[in-house]
Length: 146
Image (cartoon, rainbow, N blue to C red; front, side, top):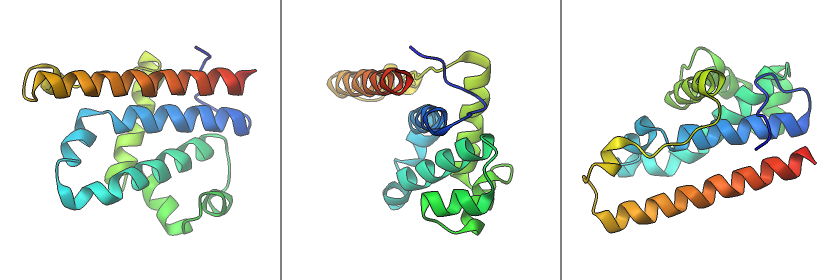
């Protein structure tokens, strides 16, 4: 798998970092717990994408006004996601970035899911989905690298 840049230099690098942050945040135990609340499900993925996209562009040195224009949200929203994780999505993306910088790109099924809290058949389906997402991300990163 190609390297995920922690300090992106161009659009391809931004997309790589953005994708890794989104995937790592989405499959974190905190996110999966938050998604159990049906009232939060509708907004979480969008918030995580916005935070990951903003974070990757910020790491590339883009000004907040340009980030807001590219993502299609207000500058205030961007600031909230970037300001030390003022939003929950921003906090999760920041944690994902810290994990990425220490451990590299890793998505692991939370131990709670693997421990039998969910029927084995559902865990198997989730694992298959995670593997498909990993493969798609790896394929996308390889394609962007070439």
